[in-house]
Image 1 (cartoon, rainbow, N blue to C red):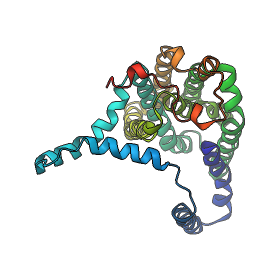
Image 2 (image 1 turned 30 degrees about the vertical axis):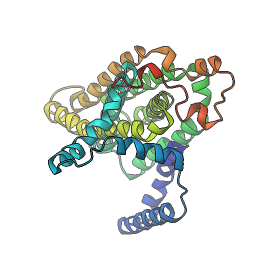
Image 3 (image 1 turned 45 degrees about the vertical axis):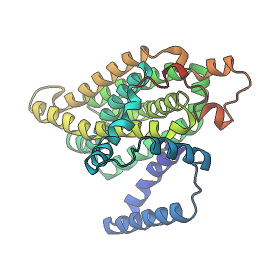
Length: 312
């Protein structure tokens, strides 16, 4: 639902670009961001229960040494981010998911940052073409994330759905790299909506393989990896662009061919995910009293592997 709402913004944003001036769009964007800030500040309820907050506080306090010297406090605080990220090294599943998140972040951030400029330069996209691109991206994003995600997950399981998402992204980036007409790009953007299923699927896999009080930690670690990938992705693809822009076919499109290669590697890595830890349907079959509609069953890690809990 979160990503469906995000896609809704993509679907409606072209209306603003076509009806308002650049200054008007900037003022409206600033006003909406300010409204979102105050809505979050005064209206958004706290999702962290007092019990879990107290347990997390006890865990933090247990690491504090009484009468600790100042240099020790500084070192402990500087090392805290690495300790938080160490959850990604807990077991083989988390290491594979972190790798998949990194590959996905590289390609998605590069596509978001470079695609429009590439299309305007190579295929002569104008404002109307870009607006249509965003309408397709947003409308299908709402449909895929809000309607198709759950049925596909129940039909295929998380592992197969993840392989499917990365395979779609492989095809999409190949089309970007070799496309010579605008229609091919529009069709690829539509298929790319299914590629957007990768990140929520990875998040779901991680969430039901950790304890309830570790939800924030695992999601934070996941976003840290994605943020690192977001920094690496555009830089690496821009480097390939400048190295190949003077060459023959596909020329600058080689950067998207490289992105497709990364997605292909991610698809192969996804095939190595352990089936018993990445299929919520099997977990529900083994625990018939649990329901996917109950947060404690699926969203907060009731299925965590206790044998790996302290294996960091």
